[in-house]
Image (tube, rainbow, N blue to C red; front, side, top):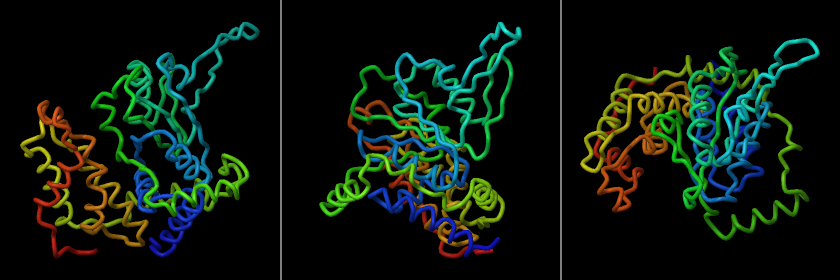
Length: 323
């Protein structure tokens, strides 16, 4: 593995996204890490903060097809997956593929879709395949889902079941601009673009085939020492022992932290994982998998704070092998 070449590819992706998106660079790196780990991302944030823009920027930067679905209470599984239509001219059924047959799928306001539709999406998120009338169709690689939900409006929504939330490798938030300068920069860039959507003018910085190579490198070529693996396991187990937690992070949370930390190591130009990679991603990989006790939910306890406390309670390994 050529770490310098891979770091350069990742840097070009992040830089192109940040040339248009105004915000936290580390957030862009986390989204890229999730994509390299072949995982899905859930954004929970207020409207108008650039979630759709980020999804499109990443998609076009890696030369991937992009589809967006606006979820509504009356959306059906066939609206996302596709359906078969009878063609009387030749006496056969023809498959009309839905927007899920793409590389990057944005499910906008996913919690507005009814449970039946949410369940249909669950298969494609986990298996990377779609079953339509008993026939299974594989999704094209790379494939990952970026979903958004609004945390301030619950009328007409259907909360995501824990099983589906657990399928998202990271749960992220963009947040409002951090300073007056960032706020001004957003307005200034809009004036320079002369359009609301500058993403269609983007040229890919790497091809989809090259991106798949990066995904394989993240899976196969990044070393993680047993000491660091133990560090992951201890953090996850601490979330289960916390006095305010009813259900702690699952083993899938451990695997999510493993996969994204290896991808983050690649982005940073390393072929080994450090404890700092784990600390950077632990809150985003584990907090949404935690179910608090009812009394603590009523007290508005934050799951992210629980994970931070788990991080503080576990000793950081000082010695580990890099290879």
